[in-house]
Length: 298
Image 1 (cartoon, rainbow, N blue to C red):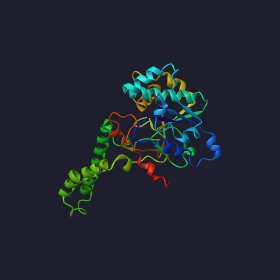
Image 2: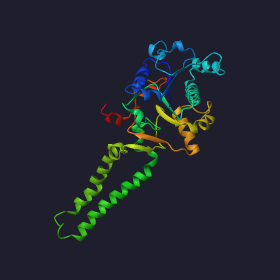
Image 3: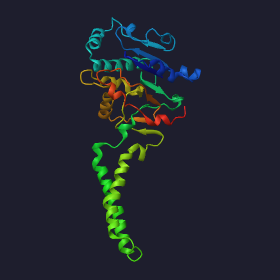
Image 4: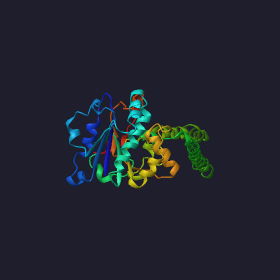
């Protein structure tokens, strides 16, 4: 397996913590099964805060950097200096993915440098190792289904009360008709509203295990690619139209009809309140969180 962490400059660095959480507790056999490939995204790697750290010269199996004789070096440098972070991010991602594919690994795990792995993650690995709970909640595009189900619940309960009052008129004569009206018009709608307010993941949590997640699977913190699809995937990436890695992956998967899978609960957690992307992404970085990761006892 080839393991990757894409590093870019920012105020706070979590790369060391990410790598430590991935390697801690692995047996010698497990460690040998992983080819740790780390990309320093700066065109001048010495400017990256972690470049001078001692562990970087001993832990990775390969430290990937950009060389001045690389065909795309000037373009990469222009993106870096001009703040074209989206083009640069896509290039970094595909460049690293291609480099890992060339190692001959059967599976390639793309891990961003702001994640924390759960203890024992290697035995459970599959494809999506991280997802955001918030995006698996009630979705606005599915409101017709929610409305239909809500109406069915309301109609069933109201119909049951009216039918019971009619059939068992004598036994239920102490229950006024107004009580049925109030229950139908106030209490049942209120209960339905509370159901939605509690949240989808509270009321209908996904069971543990591996599940299809072809929609709402944000973000790109941890993805595992089978070797067989990497060449076809790389052929379809486009630096001019693709802006964010997770959106690019989803777009290609939708077009090709590829099924996406996710491990529940997430095996990785997003850490930090700042984003390496910059340009206002710090606000969104604060919301990237998987609550069920916290269910793990370690």
